[in-house]
Amino acid sequence: MHTIGIDVGGTEIKAGLVDEAGRVLESARGASNRDDLGALVDAIASLAGSVTPAGGNPAGVGVGVPGLVRPGTGRVEFAPNMPALRGAAVGPLLSERTGLDVEVRNDADMNAWGEFAAGAGRGSSRLVCLTVGTGLGSGVILDGRLYEGASGHGAEAGHIVVDPDGHACGCGGRGCLETGVSATGIVALARERIDAGDATALSVAGGALTARRVRDAAAGGDALAIGVWDDVGRCLGVACASLINLLGPDTIIIGGGVAAAGAMLLDPALAEARARAYPPLFAACRIVPAELGQDAGVVGAALLAGRRARESSLASPL
Ligand SMILES: [Zn+2]
Image 1 (cartoon, protein in one colour):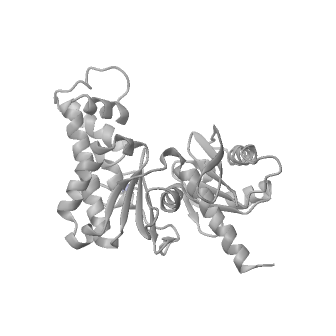
Image 2 (tube, helix red, strand yellow):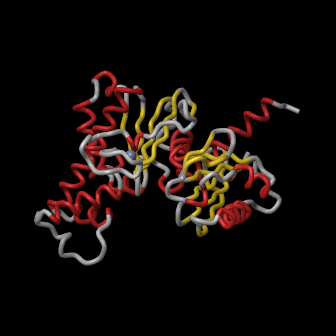
Image 3 (cartoon, helix red, strand yellow):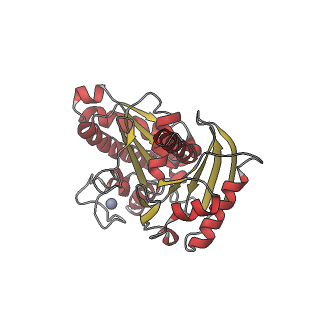
């Protein structure tokens, strides 16, 4: 059984035809549209068509979006960074266009499902997947199912408070994990230290400051940049310790573009989590990098749609 996975971002949409093992058989990318729902749905439907082989009959479509989705409705309830999605019935609209069953979820949940089913979380039954990019998204899987919580929107680990007096967060709070552990947080911290006059190669290099530049500077031995990554990693470790103490997961997966920094981020995170988590709970949990890279959202969306198709065919065998 093949299904289609779609990962909707603010600037780009990724699509893939995925088999039951999570292998991407066909893939395509196209431009997204932040503001116009009609254009966005057109783009998604067109990409879904382009990864469907002639005569192919996918069993369903999964779509990950940067917003909060009411489970079972395909309707986006909250999308602070993408006006086109606000209140949009993405699932029903796409179902009408494609003639297929459509499952819509938050993109970080789709990443978590991809890693759980076909990536670094294979064999796990209780995991937390943190996707560190511009912000910090999270998905929690408990006893093999995506945790939806009382609101239907699961958990938002990016908004766990790690510093009560910290920076203002886009959610209206202060000192949330995502204000420190994200590309935005890395740039803000580096900027703060450059402005404070700390010596660094970054202050004299041209171009806009980005997390990638701070990463490259750290890899080149720049003390300020190394200090930034160390502090960001430690902050991530503080949050991991809390997640371990609260949920007792067997796996915490760190993915997203910022996680490409590898040991620079994970080593201090691991040391901090080890120092802070309750020891027997820490001993039962591994903290590992994601395996699926940029495909996690597409694979997770497709595999979750596949699970839904199997469950509905079991429920109504005729
Ligand atoms: Zn927040």
